Length: 236
Ligand code: 9D3
Image 1 (cartoon, rainbow, N blue to C red):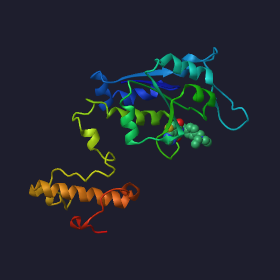
Image 2: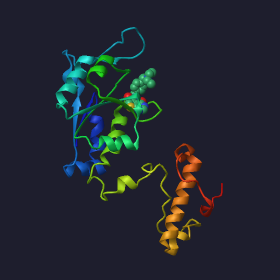
Image 3: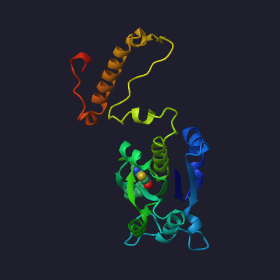
Image 4: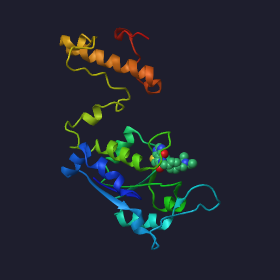
């Protein structure tokens, strides 16, 4: 997969994309990330790309010209999906990440300052995505979240081919708790079922723990889940 990130701060991304999974995916040739500075497409000698909003109001708006040129310089006919990250977009979900992972080329754009001139969104954007109902200072962090959550679904990026599918949220409930050595830590014991070696019991216990926590913390995720039933004995 190829990803072009269009922004005013290409340096912002160097750290996150040069470590860990992302770095591994890039080295394995599964992922190619290009960072483009929208200022390179400025139409004036001061490299300005923003201006005051028509109609008044606070802040600055990214001008359509440089943004359109930046998108069009990255775009490849019929092969690119152009995503605008903004607080007004449709929410990013596991299903959306999985769908985006099938694309061969993503172009990511986001507002700096108050946002981007609406006309370039109309003419050059395929879809608008938000990463959640809270406000960031810029879309940079949202772009990192999108890249990270999408590339997990590219075959070969995670060590084990089914890992992405098996993870939390894929089937709509939380992960079960994990334990490792020592068996006693500051007086706290590892749940005995995990030490007894009965794998059917362990599976049952993990499922009940996952359901119990999901029910407690995110009752909204429990729709369509099997009822927390008798043999799973819960203390709620
Ligand atoms: C006062 C109006 N604000 C909109 C709610 C302006 C504004 C705030 C923050 C415009 C851009 C931003 C920066 N955030 C993003 O670009 C962004 C974002 C977010 O803030 N929350 C969740 N998802 C996203 S995706 C891009």
